[in-house]
Length: 120
Image 1 (spheres, rainbow, N blue to C red):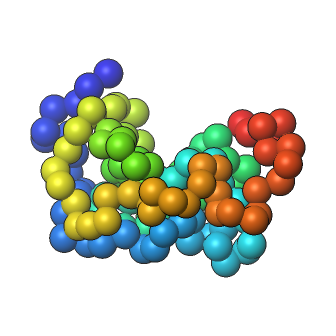
Image 2: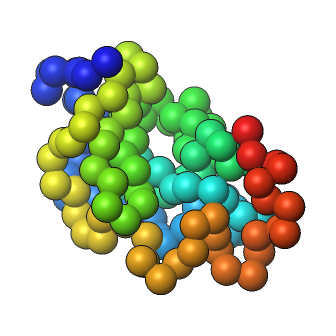
């Protein structure tokens, strides 16, 4: 389902992303499948297919409802509160994705050989 512009409150286009990878996975030495960026505060977390699901945990802890993909070439937004998808949204502070040379899954050197078997 696609949302209207009014359903995307809580976006701050001036806030840069928190880093190149999932904040919590970086701290714990974990890995991620895909990355998501909070459109309100810039927190970068891992997606729900990743082992730790930090992007959703961030929403639950903060109430910040809107995320966007932090993958190169993807521009969609997801609203956790309404469970709605938008194919695009406002331009956010750069960068718009993790570095293109960073592998998916990532980061390099921490992804287990059997990573496909561990995805949600």
